[in-house]
Amino acid sequence: MKKSTIWLLAAVMAATFFGLLYIQINYFRTTLKMREDTFDEAVKRSLYQVSKNLELDLTKKFLDEEYIAFNKKNSYGNPLEESPGRKTVTNRQRIRITDPSGNPIANMEYDISQTTDIQIAKPGRHRQGSNAVADASYRMQEYFRERHEYSRELVESVASKMTQASPNMPLEEKVNFKNLNNTIRDELRYNGIDIPFQFEIVDKNDKPVYKQETYREPAKAEIYPQVLFPNDPIDKLNYLWVSFPTKHQYLLNEISLFVIPAFVFTFILLVTFIISIYLIFRQKKLSEMKSDFMNNMTHELKTPVSTISLAAQMLKDPGIMKSPEIFKHISSVINDETKRLSFQVEKVLQMSLFEKQQATLKLNELDINDVIVNIANTYQVKVEKFGGSIDIDLEATDTSVNADEMHITNVLFNLLDNALKYRREDIPLKLMIRTWNQNNKVYISVEDNGIGIKKEDAKRIFDRFYRVSTGNRHDVKGFGLGLAYVKKIIDDHKGTIKVESELGQGTKFIISLFNIK
Image (tube, rainbow, N blue to C red; front, side, top):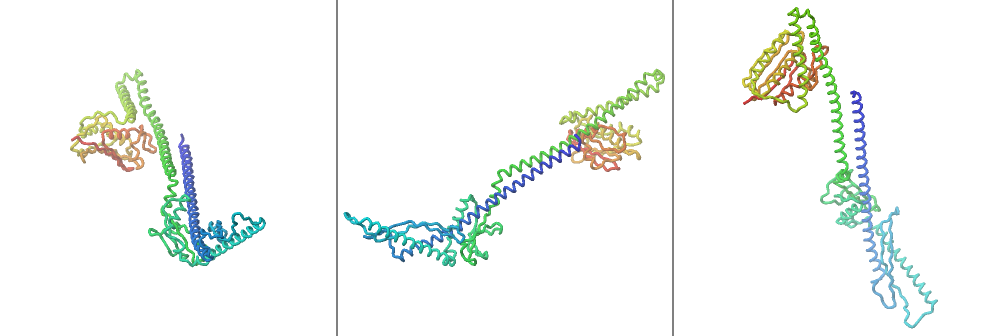
């Protein structure tokens, strides 16, 4: 897959994800706004009904007072007592009171008693039919006229008192503050709101008239106002302020049952998306490295095979057999190229180490200084061939380590080979191997004065198949496995390795291994 295709796929996935996230967030905002609007409407409806209930209570209070006073004034007495020759008739009267806009304030029913003189016929005596009907009709008309007059005067009296007396009454007489809390709570519950609230009553100048003992001043935007007794004069109007300390938690709790899981799954989707893109690019880079490895391996194996094949053909020439020196030279070439081919095959076989969690190590007690001396003596001839030198500085005194001699030797040879490959052509190669002790460990450093490594490359030189670019130099060959092998072997020995390098100045590898106590 091309890198441009991967980037396009990543862009499409990112656009889809963020588009989905944007829609999801907008949906949550809209849902929360709808919940808040519904809550506000329910609160306003409840407070409006609270105001109407207060007006209803006040109207009923006036009506009760006027009803008793009116009956006493007209000497109706006790409607349950009847005297001979009189008849008490009780009728139910409906009274409906509205405000100037036509909205109902109160709907009440009262039993109205009216006592009239009625001629009760004695047994055995019957009046003439026509006179009895006319007399009864007249009395009924008089009764309904008196009842209508009674109701009209009662209502007019109550309306007059509501208009004149109510505005001048103290608020404490118009409102029962002890019952107001219950009235508000009942109305809120009726409209589906059952959360803590607080209230206070203020005048037109926002000066408190009454407030709860536990009342805490809320923000202005959190107050729900409702005018009390709107028919009072403007300068005597009072307002009921209600607020809800836990409103936001209440609204969030309503949608948290699906908001929290939605965000959790969205976060998981985001993490999965990022990891997928990372793995795709990593696999792409690994694929490119493997392709480079195959190309390098083909070239590295082809060269010694071609040289051996050419030397073998030369040996078939009878003239070669007559010249011992030429025969010896050709035999030496075949031997060197065979060793070179074996070394390259051995590097390829080292790849199997990376498929296992740990290489098979044959651990024995080694003196690391002795190993370094042997390596330096073996490698000195090769370094001098290129006009260089190799020195050792063995300061370590506790040099016993538990290690695999073959793999540790290969590690040091790999580091020396890299120093030889990446030397500078303009100055002689200088190699330095040092040892020292620190914190129950023995440290080994391999230092050169080669071309050095860039900082961005230094972070990746231990990756499989990774090879540092050498510009226009084509004489440096390899598979990109050497330092990866070094890192794995040192890790399997429970040691550490790090690199210090400066471009154009040289490179130093530092290895630490535990001493044997």
